[in-house]
View 1 (cartoon, rainbow, N blue to C red):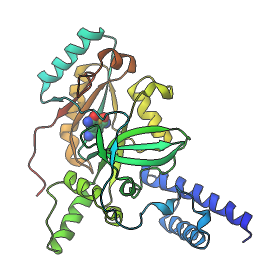
View 2 (cartoon, protein in one colour; view 1 turned 90 degrees about the vertical axis):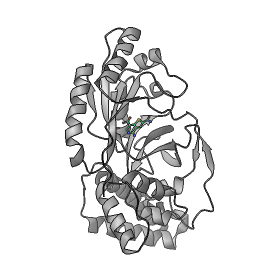
View 3 (spheres, rainbow, N blue to C red; view 1 turned 180 degrees about the vertical axis):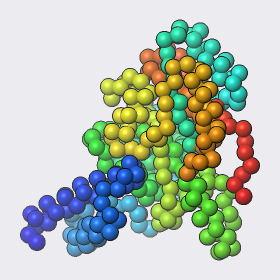
Length: 319
Ligand SMILES: NC(=O)c1cc2c(N)ncc(C(N)=O)c2s1
């Protein structure tokens, strides 16, 4: 094939494989059979092997890194990753709601989301290209685990818009993958992971990204670092839709709640439904929806006044 045609084919393969991967891993809705996807990936890998100068930095072939790292570099988050204050019962939630009402009157609503029991991560994109990923660490300084995060197939290497943005989310291990991993470790006489959260953390902090790649991790993205209004959005609900439109995997169980009673109903529903989810959740996150209200309420030193995490009562570990 002539060089010009080769460049065209490489561009076409990158575009197709990004689109098919997004449909499969993010939307859980494959556009082509696995065999077709694999054949296109093989074709691109063959061309890149012959012509390394045609390898795009965000080529789907660049997900599994090279040699293991010696250690992790530190990353200072541009915007601190705040933690959430906790609520353990209905009274705590009604206290939270009362404080909101006293501060901003009664024209507000909430967004409720499932609190994913994984590892908080921050992903940085420049002009739409994934450039760096880090753990939360102490909220200000985390560890650079970019090469490991690149192995997670639902993390887009290229966004649908060329924006520069820092997003937050949770990396987790699905329940089924956790059970399969522990069965394998038991057969090999290795220590078992106590729960999916520890398994996800252990998998992401591997110095060899090939091990991370084998652990079937996934993500849900749920926030933007810094000023969300910079992207022309003015509520949490709109922000989640915007993140989804960029190509991130955003949990679909998010719900607008007009009153704290709606919040309590949402919590009741997921207390019952929780065992049927394919991933672990340890609570429900409740956030005041409009950014103007969030700004009015502000944050304490460590956590926002406009959000709270209802924690489910501790349950016995998966044995
Ligand atoms: N520490 C935090 O700020 C959060 C932690 C989590 C979590 N583990 N899962 C979901 C959300 C969410 N949808 O907002 C948040 S927010």
